[in-house]
Length: 251
Image (cartoon, rainbow, N blue to C red; front, side, top):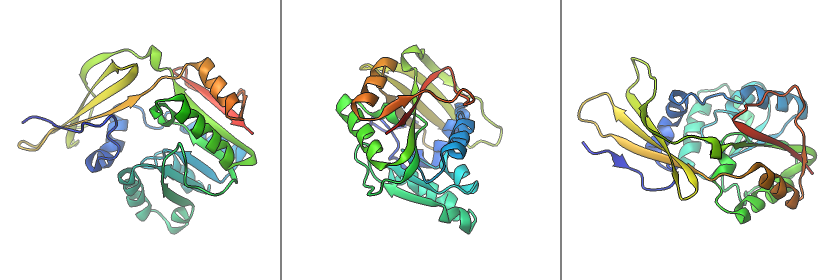
């Protein structure tokens, strides 16, 4: 049976993909890559915390369980719906720590400026295609910051990523799906295609994708400066991955 394909650049607004997103991230081995860094930043800079492009809450929900006040912004109601499903099973005090907002990271529909920490900890910033979008996003992040607040941005070294053909990702015996993935360069972007194959016969295969646009390190620092933010080095005790650049920015 031919796979049902989502034709968009990014599949985050597909309801099935949103439901399977955590499974995909886990099978790709990319869950909790920066959880220690995020936790240490929360402990050092405090809350409230805003995550731009929070998705299904993989980063924010653990913070809420630690007692931090968090806000999640995402332009995908489908992803936020999964986050809300998780919250419905959480303790009341955890639910009270979380606010979810549907909106775009370029122009967030948020009218407050008290965030102590704003996170772009996954690939959120790399979904932006143009410098106009990137600059608008950074300027609005500055607008939302408390006077002593900081923005933490993760910038994956996409130009160092290798293209690869379809590879089946390691799974578990009780998984309902098999995940195959491939990575390729498409119009100066790095695209990963994700094929989900049901283990039950007669069910539909599904093809999803995401596409990321690289930003060179020096250019990112120029954009940060142009936005009115100041780039400051991360404290030496902060754990960072060598496969990404990380930027700590203040007003």
